[in-house]
Image (cartoon, rainbow, N blue to C red; front, top):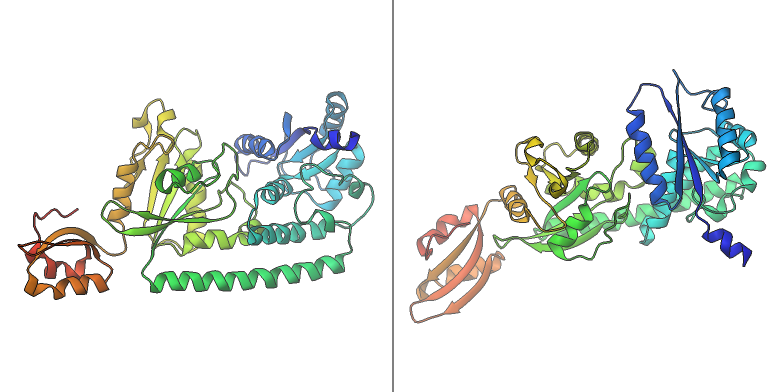
Length: 420
C-alpha cells in the first residue's frame, strides 16, 4: 500500500537554469516549467544564475549550489531539473551535494516522449533516443543509479535497461536501429504508393501546444488527442479531407517542436518530421496568443529548412486568434491565415489557401454533356475527376473536378461557368 501511495505522489520539482546570454534564458525557463507540468510534476520554484559558461563540475557555482541544497531541504523537493544538458559528472556532483535526484532538459523531454508514444514505432524511437543519450551518462552505478526508483525522468521503454551493462545497451541500440530502418522502408513504400496514386498530402507542423491536433480534429474529426499540454501528440496521424473544390487531400498531424530541441531528438523522430518534408503543402501553425509566436514560427521555419522544405508551399496559420485582444497587431505575412481551430473560425479561408496552393490547379465544373460526347465522361472517370453524373432528356449532367490541362476540353460543356 505504501509503495502505491508513493507511486501516486506528485513530485515537487525545483527548476534550475543559467543565463550565459546565448539565448532567451527567461523564455526557456518558462517553457521548462510547462514541460515539467506536462511530465506530471509540480514546478515549485525557479532558481537562475548568470554565468559566462556552465561550471564544469556542478553547472552552477558553489554558492548557488548551496542555495539550491538549502531550498530543497526546506521545501521537500523531490527532483531537480536543469535547463541545460548535464554531464554524468555534473549530475553525480549535484546529487551528492543536494541528495536530490537530478535530470536535465533533454532527459525531461525524453520522459514526456516515453509517456506519450502510443505506436510501436514511437516507442522504439523513444527507447533508442533514451539509450543513446543515457549511454555516456552511465559511467557509474553508484548513488545516482539507486535514485532511479521511478517518477519523472525514469519512465519509458529504456527504464528497465538502465542498470544493465553497456555491452547489452550497445546490442539493444543496434537492434532498435535495424527495427526502425525496416519501418522506415515500409513507410517509404507507403509514401511512394501515395505519390503514384496521386494523393496530395498536407502536413500540419508547428510549435508544441499551438493547437495542431485541435485543427486536425476540426478539419477531419480525426479524434486525435487534443490537450493543453506540451507534446500531447507524438505519433503521426493521417486522415483524408475533401476540400470545397472537390479535391481530396491527406492531412498529417506531426509532433510539436520546442526551442533548443537537441539535434539527436530531431533525428530520433525524423520519421514523424519526414511526413512534413515529403508533404505537398505545409501548414505552419502557431499560437497567436503567445507573446513568443514570432520565435515559434522561426523555430519551425528553421527546422523545415533543415529538412529541405524550402521549395514547398508553407502557409503560416495564426491559431487561437480569439485570445488575441487586437488581431490587427498580428503581422500580415504573405499568404497567412488567421483562425480559431477550437471554434471553427477562419477554416473556410484556410481551406481556400490550401486549394490555392495545390500542386496542380483544379476547377470544379457542372457540365451538360451531349450523349454523342459521352466519351468525355469516360476520360474524366478514368482520371478520377468525375464526381457525379445524371442522365436527363437534354444530355448527361455531371460534376467534375478537373486539372488545368483538361480545362479546354470541358469548358464548352460548362453549364453555369461556376468555377471555384
